[in-house]
Figure 1 (cartoon, one colour):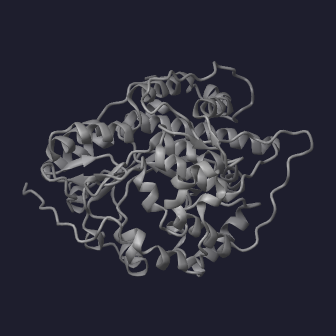
Figure 2: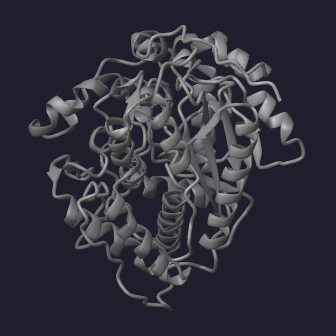
Figure 3: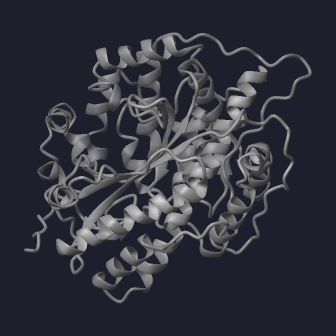
Length: 474
């Protein structure tokens, strides 16, 4: 089959940043400094995300006055929530508390599904290749492979799974299937949150009417899009319960971002961010943590308000970092970069399911909700995007810099009942240890980028890492 020729870049890497005022104004945003939400020691770190805080402010304006969150009862400690720590590849051992079944942490198996987005790259130059339409046509009849916003992107989607081994098997199968098709088209499938070299901008938008309309309305932001995420869907029995889960997930989103940070290289350079995808994706006015709503009716009213005010084209383009899926009976967690290897994606799926299952159990028990301010959640996300697991995080409850080792212990303690009830303790323990030994995707990309003698070697190494297999319990 003839090789697809890549289109040269036409948009600068920072196009999305330059359009900040235009896009954020769609939600009526005000300029609010993120660093006001964090400790003074992290002010320099958080300054680049002032536009993200502006989007948060605009979102709050669009949503209007929300109802107050019930305060915990006297004598009841608030939930301890924090960003995920880590060693950044330093080799610190990871452990999960041992099984304690019969605790009532979950009400039966909770289903899970995973969507992953990938970039198609020229093996010699690293340029984005607009081959996704051809790839999807080649795999006609495979429902798990679909087009995405840009023609250099493809998305894969597992079916509904009940075990992490099932998730891992589907992820590996779909990655290999798409990679083989890409190779026939003369390009490489790469699991990276951002294309490592320049991309074509608006010239690459997929020809579907909805994508064209997104480009027409939000052109500057769409021009800087084309980043790749991993979305985890977890089944919920009702939308009202799902809204309660969203409120309880807010403080933990930074954990999942830190674990999956996998986009340090963009425009042919090291951006200084572990997740450049998050930094650029935050340009969308609705790409923020979910608010705290009392029920699904209030959630739906907020969505309608955002669409009416022009902050989103439709319900599907309300890009909350966690939301009720517009298509499935699930909570959809969208904060993560696409993972460099399938094993890390399984880790993300397992932790996300455990967090949702824990939130469901708490909601059913009536456990009081602790709701940290939105600006502190944003500060924690900024720290996770900047450093991944390699540096200090921000505690979204206090807004202060925190020791990451202690915070990881809190996270694992928070979800250990759900992990045990689903039989996932051993798998998650093994995958966390593997993450400590190898580092995050961002750590590994940086090592490959500085260690590769040339661009072809770097692209080859990324493509090979993207096909790393998953072994149960490891």
